[in-house]
Length: 303
Ligand SMILES: Cc1cc2nc3c(=O)[nH]c(=O)nc-3n(C[C@H](O)[C@H](O)[C@H](O)COP(=O)(O)OP(=O)(O)OC[C@H]3O[C@@H](n4cnc5c(N)ncnc54)[C@H](O)[C@@H]3O)c2cc1C
Image (cartoon, rainbow, N blue to C red; front, side, top):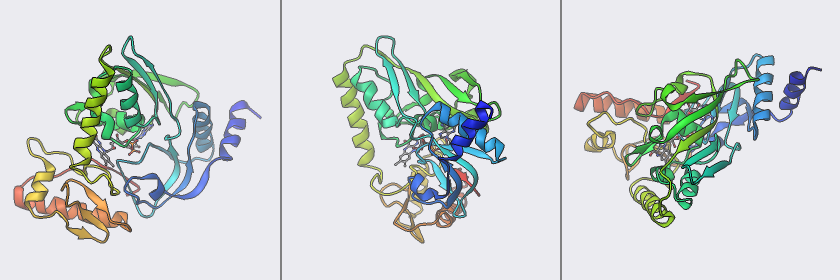
């Protein structure tokens, strides 16, 4: 048996079938993935890509599922959840960090602060992975991934034996956008350059203060995907929605958060269709009242 076929056969052994994706999204909604695997190494990812090709299955990658709305009917093909691919290497002298795609962004922000590296303090409250944060060009409190990203290492599912490196300048990074959103590539790792030689106590204090200011103004204890809508500059989506008295508005168990109007929270048993209907209602009312089209920041899968 050729080496890649043997690897593919092994991969098939740890692929699960009909896995509810509600357990893989922070909104706690989403139907079953036809096939799902959580690879913990590059070899496992390569083998799974090979297996999906041999089975002629489509393939998508997810991280912590903190920016996803997955349809109630679920997803076909193979879903690769990268959240087990964790680890990072810091070089405090040079200000460089290499992090695997599944490393939680808050963990990385804390590690950087402890090493006296400044530049990720804003990221501590974002419950995603490095891969998802790069794909989304995540940002908060005046900072974003584009400010500190040097390069990413990718795997092209069309060429599973080879990885490639792209510089940040090649990724079309813009507000919550990167060209990775348009490509099937799997982000394996990312390299960041931060400001070195800072006082770890000061950076850590700034990091903690950022987290505190978010958890006191946003519904962190309830299932959500963070901000549902992009801010239509110069306006704030939350303020436009709040001005219409929509805080607390519910469809099923999906509710416009009474704490922050740009969050839709799951009160327990919300379905993707409830959230979809609430998003449409908010968009419709904001359009009628303010003449402004709200666009979603969250990625919809399976619709
Ligand atoms: C409480 C809360 C607060 C939030 N606050 C913020 C905020 O302040 N700022 C902000 O920008 N976002 C925020 N978010 C949204 C979300 O956390 C970010 O967008 C985050 O970067 C998504 O990372 P993830 O790993 O969860 O990606 P996922 O949601 O799993 O995926 C997001 C996109 O990236 C792709 N993807 C993920 N990993 C990979 C990979 N390894 N290779 C290829 N593609 C991949 C997916 O296919 C999808 O298109 C918040 C979410 C929550 C729940």
